[in-house]
Structures are given as structure tokens and as C-alpha cells.
Length: 438
Ligand code: URA
Image (tube, rainbow, N blue to C red):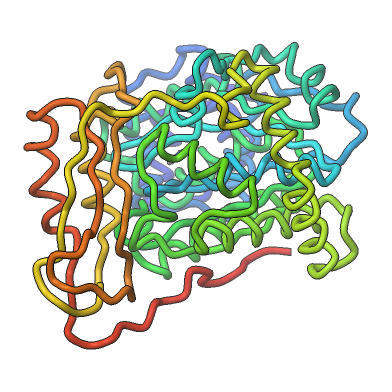
């Protein structure tokens, strides 16, 4: 790799030139080794925010990021290896029932998830509300666990894609997060370092998502699918609605309870629809079902026969958790207090705002304001009325599960503004917006 001048590269990018794969690989390597200063990298990132990246630049940048540290080696796992990633939303616990369903269908699922970010919940935080459950799986154990259980539910390790960790911290502190190429390369470098055969992306769009419009979400989905394709990893993305929370339970332990309901064949219809749609995509990418109908039958079979729930119980036990939680013979800790929110008029729910509800759960203590905050897994909100539902004044809209009066007082104003009620019937907007990829 040739030596380059970072100042010259910043100026060329600032002026709209295309940087070569060698130059971009040098930037990532030199930044990771400390040769490029943080202020120089921030400046280059800002030039990327304004100028964007060509497909060639994005492919080279992502490949360099993914090789900035260790990559997972799953070559001993003969089964097709498929993962799923969601760009994040409120009440989005889909990964928790989805992963065991797909693993029970004969696919290896090396799922690496994140923690809550802002008002959105994180799969790791939800899983860790099961007593004893650990998610820090060392890379050398990953393949062994996957061979044994076909499923690993893990967190990002320190050694995987260290460039993203360092770049993300800079982006957070330099106003350079909202850039489609930077978001896409950040997500895809971590996913492609998992040695996958296929990836299904759930790109959320709406008030509770990071992408607020279908246009933005489509560009992000297309960009991530193109990175997957250029790396040789089949990638399919679904754009799904996140104007209202997914399911009815928001908050860490509450979301584990809803996930178990889904694995038992019940649960809210929107959760069932997204879980089933993404499971079908994963089975098709894995080549274990010949078409969508066969994939749906397979998914129904593993849920109805209890095989998906057995798989979840198996992995909970293998990762230190209490399997009695999965069987329902022991219950997760509950918040000490409840408060009910009532409809103020008759009509139809026209808005149940995901952003306000997600922010309220953070204020209850269910998410973090600062990176080291300790979360309270028991708190959250259980929805009784969602968009389209008919309500009469005085009906329950939601129950708030809370630990302290101060936290409730802080969350209530957000929740009181989260619902709108219209005198006219409301058509529920579609949950599945579009599909992008292979
Ligand atoms: N999630 C990531 O991993 N990276 C981003 O840049 C944004 C969301």
C-alpha cells in the first residue's frame, strides 16, 4: 500500500474528486493505527457528508473497515449462515423470536446485535433482562457455539471492526452521523465481518426510526444491498413502518415476554407479520425452502410444534440464562408500580407516536441518556390502543410500568401527547412498505 498525504486526500474529497481504493484503505489503516489525527479524520468525514461516495469508494471503504480487525471464521459451519439487522425502532423485538425460528428451520444464525441507541431499544439489553444471560461471546467460541446450537445471540466484540468503533465515536462528536454512505458502511462492515452467506435488513421508516422518509430509507436500503452484493453476500432489505411502536410491549423485560408469546404462536399481528416476512427471506436466502409458500409452512411448523421455543430455551440455557423464564414457570422481575393512561374523547386512534413513546421509556429508565447509564429492565409501556382502533372516552390507551414517581412524572408529558384521536375511522397504513435486493 502506497503512502499518501491525508491533507491532500481531504482537499481532493472536499473538492469533489473520487478517492481510489488504495487511498481509502490507507486512510482506514492509518486512522486505526493512530497515524491520522482525529481532527483530520473528522474533516474527511465532513467532506464525505457533503460530497457522498461513489459505489467504488463505498465498496473500498467498507472492505477496509471490515478488515480493520479480526473477522469471524465460520468455515467449519456447513449450514448456510444468515443474519438479520434492523436499523432500529421502538418495540422492535423481532430478532428475539426470529433468530430461534430460523435456526429451528435448519439455518445457522450468528446474530450479533447492539444496545439501545437514543430512543430505540437494543436486542442485547432486552436479552440481558433474562437473569444470567450473557452476550459477550469471544470470537474463538463463536463457531463452536454455532455448530452446537445453530444460533448465537451475541454482542459486538472489541476486536471486530475496530475502525467503526473509533469512527462512530468521532461521528457522534462531530456532526457527521447523518450520511447514508457512512451509516451504510458502518452497519455493513460489522455484518460482513460475521462471515455470512446472506443478510436480511429491516430498514425502519417513520417517526420512531432514524430514517424519517421513505426516500431516505430507500436510499439507505439500496446502498446497503449494493455493498452486500459487491462483497458477494446476498442481501435483501425490507422497508417497514415505524410511525407507531411494533407490538404492544415496549421496555426490556416486557419485550422478552412478547417475544416468548410469538414463539408460542401468539402475540400481536404486526409482530407476527414482520417476523414471518423476515423469516421467509432468511429461509429463501439460505436455500432451505424452494419458495415463499414452502418457507411459510416451515415457519408455521417450527412454531406450532414448539421447536422454535425449544431452540430459544436451548440458547438461553447455553448463554447462562434461566430457561424457566422461557417455560413460564418463573417470571421476569416486574416494575413495582403501574399507571393507566386513558382516552380523553371518543373516536379512532389516528396517531400512537413511536418517537414520544420511545423517549418516554428512556425517561422511565428503560434506555440510556449517557453511554454508561444503568438501565432498569422492568419499566416500560404496554399499549392498549394503536392506530385504527376505536376508543371511547375513558378507555385505556396504555399502562405505564414504572419504578419511581420522578421517572413517571418525567415520562408522562411525552405519553400524554403520544396519542391523537380522530372522529373519523382511520385506515391503518401498511406495515411492509417495499422490498429491495436480489
Ligand atoms: N448504526 C450503526 O451501526 N452505524 C451507524 O452509522 C448508524 C447506526
